[in-house]
Length: 341
Image 1 (cartoon, rainbow, N blue to C red):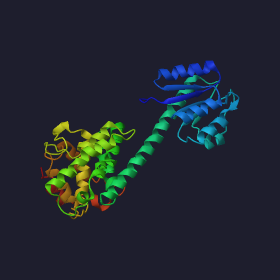
Image 2: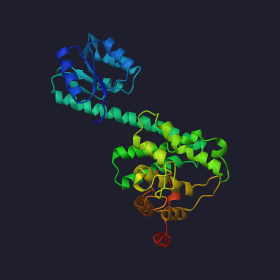
Image 3: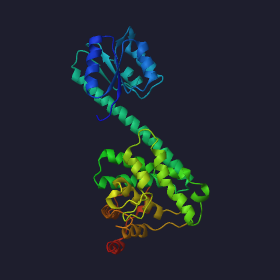
């Protein structure tokens, strides 16, 4: 585990409680201890508790009763019940109180520590799904305000993740890429409607206003809890160009964060094949030719090569909401495309 969690040990046996606190503190977690049901409930109300290790009896109150009280105001905290020797909680109780597991007191401590690891990973997954749902909702709201073609957000997220996988990104980087992709246009909340919705080409002063959305998006997203730093790179730098003529920082080549380079190709491709107020939709073959023509100018050449390969082999076809817009080139078209450098 690479995250520090708050764990509450509820046990009126001072020796057992001290042992658990010592072991789990050594693993880098923040430990709390309680010896009465009132203390447990108060501590859980006062601060986020990620895991509650709950004895079957705490200060004369059953662990079940305490768990039921905690569940009235906290559905996400993980709970592990320590049951009496030779006994175990009923499956119905574990189900009703969303208790992941239990540890029998006559079993080795290593089993309890295994349950702790499982519970904290489960909590992490719950929070990740909740966070992603929030980012998705915000991304879709931005899409609606920007009058984007329906499905743009999900398409660019899915394409970016698939391209990231093709490039060998690990799960942490892929999660950051998803976050940044969902929120890539967050800064457009700060752009006046007269500029954002103008049905014609922007003049120079309007374009300067529009370009501020990358920096403003970064500033807004940086205030969001749990957003990964690499996701902020996507938001701030996805309009940078490989040759240094992008914005907002005129970064060039590998100075542009990799996740921003990956997302930039997906964003531009989807914009090209989508109808906008100022242009009709391009055909997929025309769009992929445009992407390849901007290899080494707008885009990282190696990332372009991997994107084109995925497109050529129809590797995007199974992504939700893609449809015919990703139809690969015919052999004749691909032969022509292969000669575009």
